[in-house]
Image (tube, rainbow, N blue to C red):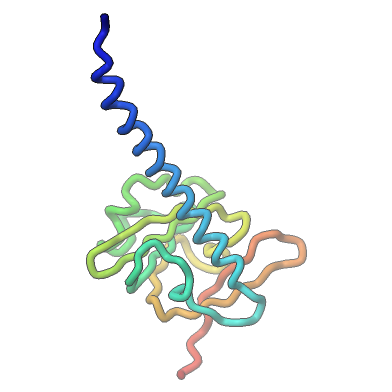
Length: 150
């Protein structure tokens, strides 16, 4: 009779691994959904009120298609190391805090941080954003709001 020991040990590991992969996908989708729920054409907003993956984040790096990962600031490079930036349908946001860094991969069909930037830019938590939704498009295009001198 074959031992069931390896099967019993592997099953929880497989389930945990599947849950972690699913939760990463959920975090990406939840953040994109939260952003699209909060945007309104013409009104500036910050990302700090949204459900970011790092609770006390201080900055975010937006990597767009064709970003050169090696040119990103050092704090973001390890999170971006496995990203294939040739995918034009995705954008990558790396949130950093005092002791935590998290990468989100977002589909660009609903919310697009890459419409008005070069291939990669760093923003502080206090950065205000404006959103525009062209009549012909379905995605909200997000742009850094100009400083108002407040």
